[in-house]
Amino acid sequence: MKKRKLFVKKVKIHRSCSILVRIQSLTALVIIMAVFVCMPILSKEKTQVWAPAEKVPGPEQHPAELIKLGEDLRAIRSWGSGIPDFAAIVKKQKEELPKLRARLDSLDISEWSYHNKIDYLILRTEMDSLEFDIYVWRRTIRNPTLYVNSAIRNVSQHLASGRRMGERYPVFPLNKEQAEAILQALADTEKYLAQGRKNLTEIVPELADVALRNPGGGYYSPGNHLIKDIENNLKKWAEITAEYFPPSETEKLVPAALKAAKQLREFGEWLEQNRDKMMGRYYIGKDAVDWYLRHVMLLPFNSDQIMAMAEIERGRALAYIQYELHKNRYLPVIRPAKTAKDYIAWDDETALLLRRWYTENGENILTDPEYQPLIRSKEAIWLNPFGFIAFPNEKVPGVHFILVVPDDHWRAKYSNMGFRTDPAALHGHEYWPGHTFQSYHHPRTACPIRAGHRDGAHSEGWCFYNEELLAALDFPFIRGARARELVYINMLQRSNRMLQLFPFLFGEISAEECRLRILAHLPPLGSGLGASLEESYDEIEGFLQGGSLPHLCMVGKHQIYRILADRKMQLMEKFDLKDFHDQIMRYGQIPLSLVRWEILGDDSEASMFWNATRLSSILKKE
Image 1 (cartoon, rainbow, N blue to C red):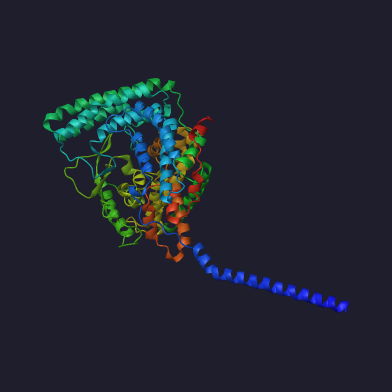
Image 2: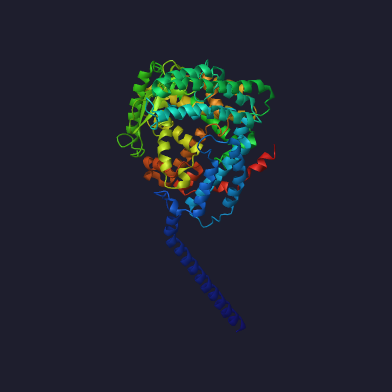
């Protein structure tokens, strides 16, 4: 009996356990079923495709304190109108910038929209850029070219000059008011140079060489472009321009030009006499370069990574040049236009063809806003130290004019970059849909912070991207298939900039070594002519003077490719190239790491920049 009771008890326990197990199993089944039922919803939420904003928010959708901070910052960054007092401006910047930074740091942005958070980072980059100008580039105390070229540009602003003459230019002959403005600008020359003598306490000898060799800037011109030749050059310019002056002012121009030229020559003599005493260094160092890349450019790459990228780009460029040479081996080599007339005919045809190819009549890959002007080329004369000079006798509304060098200029006969061989090699980069397109488009951005911001890697990256796009989509170059070689020669040139100019800025090689490396790494290839000595000067001088790093077009192009790739993976077959290109242009010329956030909803790169390192900690290492 006891055994039976024990057995019954065990059975009851077993049945209870079984029931419990069944209940637990049923509960687990219900949970699993609930999970499966919910999975489509959870999956749908997880795979929800980011929808980029259709419009950029206007000022009313920004915190008022952010808008005011941007206005105050840009007011102290500006040189202002008239003749700037360079030392006083820098002094004020040093006083005001810490106050502005304190205001920025005090903002609580935790509840802000992602758009306003991006604008916060944009203003911080502008503050960091100004701080870098003040304490690293230090142009007002290191660079004589600042004063020489400011004096010359004070005159050229009243002329129809520069490669991009644009839409805003005087019509000739000039009236009395316009003539008086030019005479006054010439008379103001010494006001710039006197500041140079006073302010230049850390002159860099290599920068003094630039001022002596290439007054006025622009394309380097050998022979008669030196500052010691400036009296003859300005006299020649004045004699030609005087023909377009009103009679009452005609006789004043040559004497005024000669007086200004004498002052510039004497400034050059002062530089030569003191060159042996100049102790400033041309390089800024690797730590400073890396800080600039991270804090001013908001790049997710340091200089080592960019150099590695440049090596890959160099290999790719040379491989693609060889592929093109192989495909074109039975075709005649193409060479530059023999006359400006021929080149302008090619260029105007390219401008029309390129624009139609991009828009609805061709590939349909970019919107063409109504405000974008037509691009047309116009032959100029070349008069040092102003360079391109034209004397238009009428206004042509809606046309942005590009000035072309005359037939006797070295760039008409010899240029590695291929402008004169097939204009499409660089037309899209420089004009439409490149830099000129950007200059009309980005200031129209509704956001006032973005409308006033310019990011070099974004600007150059977009333009470089559009060069390679032509080869990828089989653009019908007017000079035929061999023009494609020029696309990859330019790719080689841009990778070479990184590989030579970064070591130059690090202080690892001298200016002369840098020039020789540029020449050696860009030999004649196919339809390319190789880099000339003049082009090597052009490559190095702008970056030597400060204010920017070597063109980061290669880096910006690869950032655009990465955004395109990730957006393609988001949308798959719904990806549309025109929508993508319009989005790249929509959000302002801001760092592409922030454009990534706008288009993809991905702030992984932007999150790298919140914990900023101050420049002062880098400078203390020196």
